[in-house]
Amino acid sequence: MMLNIRDSLRFKLIIGFFTIAVPLVALLLYNNHYASNTIREQVADSNKNSMILYSHQIEAALNKETNFLYNIAVEDPNIAALSQLLDDPDEYFLAKARILNTLTRYHRFDNSVDLQFIYSVQKQDLFYTPIRTSSYDELLSIQTTIEQLVKQVKPDSSYFGEWKAIEYSRHKYALIRLVDTGDDFYLGAFVKLENLMIPLDMIHLEAGFAGFVNKRGEMVTNTSAIGTQRLDTALASESNQVYQMVRKDDRKYIVVMDQIQGTDVILSAFIPESQMLKNQFHFRRGIIIISIVALIILVIYLVYLNETILKPMNDLVRGMRRIKHGDWTTRLHSSKAKEFTIINETFNSMASQIHELKISVYEEQIKAHKAELKHLQLQINPHFLLNSINIVYNLAEIKNYSVIQLMCMNLVKYFRFTTKTNQIAVTIAEEMEHMESYIKIQQLRFPERVSYEIHIAEGANQAAIPPLLIQPFIENAIKHGFDFMDYPFHIDIRISLLGENQLEIVISDNGNGFPREVLQHLESGSYLENQNGEHLGITNVQYRLKHIFGQMTRLEFDNMPDSGARVRIVIPFRTVEQFSSY
Image (cartoon, rainbow, N blue to C red):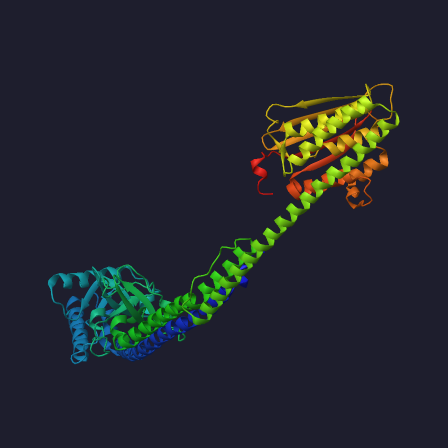
């Protein structure tokens, strides 16, 4: 029976090894991952607080500017007078100058916004405070952007409700807020987002950067920093997750964000993960090295365990299986472990002793078989002698001396041959010569009442069989089948080859055949149990065939279709030399 691999010691030890090793390595890796996440969360939380603080400062500055615009729109008499001076150009110009002076004085010491402006819807007149720019092209871009916006804006536009980001130049954005005075005039403020950027040294971003993100998650400042990636702006208002990860080329960034109230932009900070975890580098490397070393040690231990226990155990099991299947030459090699060395030496000694004992028992069995075969063969001679003397006695009763002389000569010839051929096997030709002598004796006893015919196929003459194998069946045929019929009693012997490995011998007659009860006993083999000597010849043949050929022979009894008995013997084809081992 094959051993299920799941029941083997090797499988159980390997499973036990991985049961211990995998959780241990996983725990170390998880500890490393947990420590990294903890540092990320702490750094992100710290920067999140800084972002909230600065965003509140921006909100305060923008709210202050919004309140100022509302106060000017309501309280400044020059704003109210503008709608009444539309038809007087000189007074209208003086009123604009007074308003611009008021705006300029208010922001003389406050640079939270870049410019303020006033727009007349009726006259489509835009005038504004001085614009602080570094180039004339930028000045034109700001002026054009504001003009286009105020000309297109509607009274219900969101620009009147919050500060809105607008692109005034390529990849440059600003916040704009409008206030409706109610007399077809708009007050407004303009502030560049780049002027609201947090100085990096103030929030300790080191190699990181800060920027503004619109509500779609797109960068509106430092637009090339993360390419076309979009951030998850929902995290700007969620407290359960303070950061998100983004990758640019081969660098990872921790991103924290905070929504600036009253605007449509989000303040964000990008902290490089490598800079954040630089103090943890040695710790992480130590954890990884410990994990790798632990894994290597466990693998080496598994290999050592396999060499010292599992492999010798497997060799022992394999050797026992070979012994079980009859391979007695199997021997085990010495092991590195002292215990298995003793076990292997004991196994080899036991296998050698059992092998030698098995050979001795086998040789004794062969000797016993040879002795029994010789005994069985010697039983034929006295049995035939008794029958022959009985025939001579019957001839003497009828005083047929000439026949007695011929019969005695055949008997002398027959017994001289049997005493000369005391061997285990004879050829078919030699056996048939015996049979002819015997049948001629019967023909002398019953003149013209017995006939015979022998057919030997080509190549069958050299086949060898145990001596006196056929004679008991011919003797029984004459004894039980011959009943002084109206026609001669005929015996037919046919010997042929079945292929190259089998010899078939068929003995038939035209007598009375086997009685039904006798045929049943013969077919069942029950004559082997008959010890009264009545069927000694058949029993002898059955025993001899069994001892010599084992299961490779067949002995069959039946009756001919018309009349007469038939005996069929099938044995392996052997020569006399091949019988030398018996």
